[in-house]
Length: 397
Image 1 (cartoon, one colour):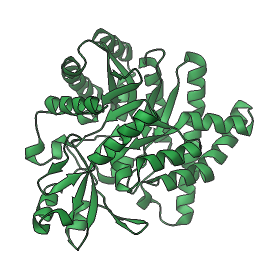
Image 2 (spheres, rainbow, N blue to C red; image 1 turned 30 degrees about the vertical axis):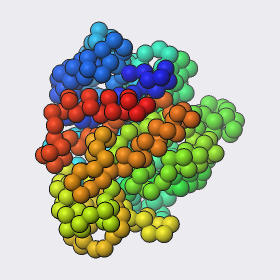
Image 3 (tube, helix red, strand yellow; image 1 turned 90 degrees about the horizontal axis):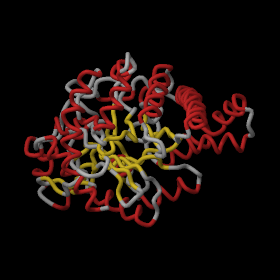
Image 4 (spheres, rainbow, N blue to C red; image 1 turned 180 degrees about the vertical axis):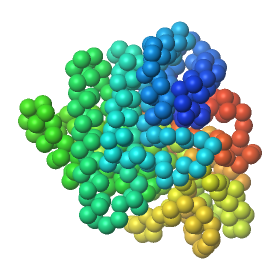
């Protein structure tokens, strides 16, 4: 939905299981009109669409894509952003680090993303911009040593440049501006603003510029301008909170480097403050979020350094003395405190305040995908939970 005539707001449909198109379609058909009726009964309601590789392939078959667009139009719905990060199944089985697979060193990731952009270009209404969020190149522990890391970054930059070429062509043919939103996250090869800036400077711009100059016959300056136009950042609030970054500082760094924020994923992490309560009660509360489906990295700030535990069980096995920790578990954005734990909701509020001064992105997508694995007290009826999150964010905007 459109807020203040500038922000397109929705939630990410990765909340709903959807390994194939049939399951995806059934869940969308059941959920979207019901949610729209409650949060945007008179106005068009935007959709943050998630398609697995299989669902995307099956959507291409026959007349399904046109039929889906017709259904969206009849229900006053529109797709403006997509989540192209998880390639395979995202529910009811162990995901963990496989959420990055296949990564940006592979043809499979490139082909999947290019197909999603063709589909988004077809679904996106004329006059709107569209974006797709994606993996931050790869999972860093899959590439051991500087040589392997360098190779992964080079291949990732090469494949990303191919997407930029595709998006140049789509805009030339259709007039629709689409961007790929790279999403830093803990233990990704890009997990904070410093690593993003280094990747653009050392890999993406020089490698990408050479490719665009050769393919388009343009100058180096024009090639870099195109790369910065089409290859942007997904600012996931939870993820940057885990890096202990302040939104104003991070956005300022990106702007200085010419890097745009294509999408803001509105999400909240767990914040563990050991000086705010009984330590044993805090550990007991945190243990209730230890589940086997997703990676839940935990970060600690020591001086200027951020130390990362790869997953929650690693932290719970030791239970050492800490002052503050932050855990990569997307909790409902309307929750400030749960039992003895807090959330990084304050970071969402800072982003929203910054948007009032500086509309650095006009795509806002709520991404609380963990409803299935939350402690039972937080597992409310799904539609009601989604509506509550959307209304909370609308009110804060």
